[in-house]
Amino acid sequence: MRIGLDLLAEGGWPAITARAVADRARIRPGLLHHYFNGLPGLHVAVAQRAGEMIIDPVLDALLAAPDTPAAVQALRDLVPDMIAGERNLRLAAELLVRALRDPRMGAERRDWTRAVRGRVAARLEELCPDWPAERREGTAMLVTALLDGLMLQLILDPALPADPALDATAALVGKS
Image 1 (cartoon, helix red, strand yellow):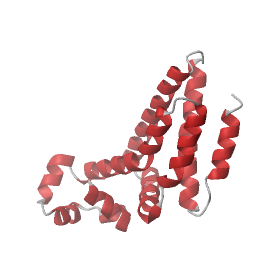
Image 2: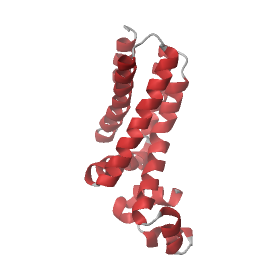
Image 3: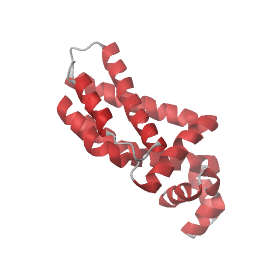
Image 4: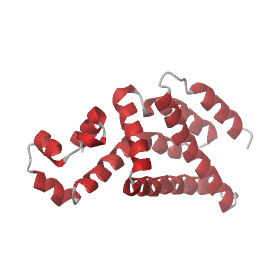
């Protein structure tokens, strides 16, 4: 998968061909078709891995936080790393563009986002059992939108400091 991520960061989706991956991995292209069910499957696997690499560390720390202040601190610590460096910036941008242009990739991204919202809602159910389901689901949507929105803002302007947005988030959730 590393090779697919490298190619994506270097040249975007057109750079990920069965031949390019096979040449770098020193394998026969047919193996990629066998394991990934063709190039579209390889693209989906690369996109899933890139999303896991960029978002999952932030999400995992957020979900492991025992309380709101710890969750905000997790965001403060990890959001800047989401797209730190040219590689993550390119990967994040390619994921967003491909999800908009390719219906299959858009569906994969939608399903992945739904799973993220489900994980957040499940954690909120543990932390806030008295909240109605609608509040947990709405909060999960806002948390997911916050992560996506911060990532988009940092893609568009990598020099933009995330701290003011995270300060505002801390102020908002502190008023629950």
